[in-house]
Length: 369
Figure 1 (cartoon, helix red, strand yellow):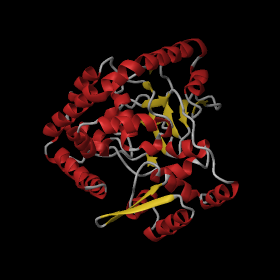
Figure 2 (cartoon, rainbow, N blue to C red):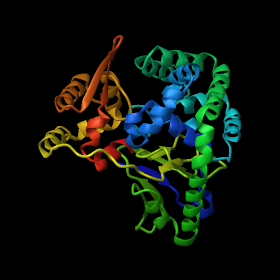
Figure 3 (tube, one colour):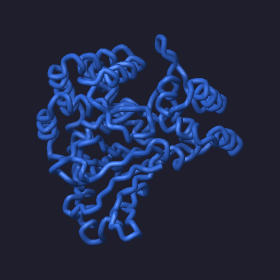
Figure 4 (cartoon, rainbow, N blue to C red):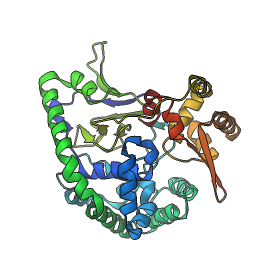
């Protein structure tokens, strides 16, 4: 599987490396809500969550639909600015329909090839978004309803939330890591100028490569090695061709690709990776790897690594029946790889990341990438 970005005919100067405070805040918020994805940040996550005021923690819980399982497109700006306020100003200029569609560009599917309409105007998409939110709790459901019924008011509320995060903890973070990220962006820009994109991509991430057609057509594509499928073009945004690469200090092991129709492609890549826990016994590792031998179970793990999902959501996402999903989930649970909990009428399944981490960094990074 791979995400593909067609850059045929794109001038080199339209490929940009730049740090983004909004994207880094999104990465930090994701780490706070899903610490199991980021074992190297355990100390920071614990200290930061403990220091949050109750009101701010409650509001973050309401909005975590936007960054917990998947990162909303609104948190990955195509034109990074030097301050969070500047990037939020640009976000304010987007009309409600486009903003809400981007905010809820969230799916448990491993395929991102279908254009998602705005839930403000499409009843089916509105129902899908509400159902996904309801499965995650009453606060997330209430947040979603507010976004759908009063997008202007919710956007003001969301901006204030992000500004309060900057005041509470992110301002100090950005002053520390912003310098490092800017230096990495400058290094990649210089590498691109001197060595070209074919050498710059693998230096940015081992999951990135350049594919140049050998049939004389002149086609050139950026290949992103992920357990997901997606396709876009550097010319997706009319009048604004290009690709933006955004470094992150908080993002490992995720390599994010934003490619919503009509939006300029954005890739957020990690600049460092921490140590992982030591592996378990060989016998236990073998037992768990055998449970993952089926390709569909591998694909389900890719989704369940990002957050809890119901059997029905997984069946719809992968085009198989609910009984088939249940059989795969049962196999994974017997191997101790899946956690299950009930929330009202919903039964939610999620990959146990601490267990999976002991299978090795290659597998963990693969399913979370």
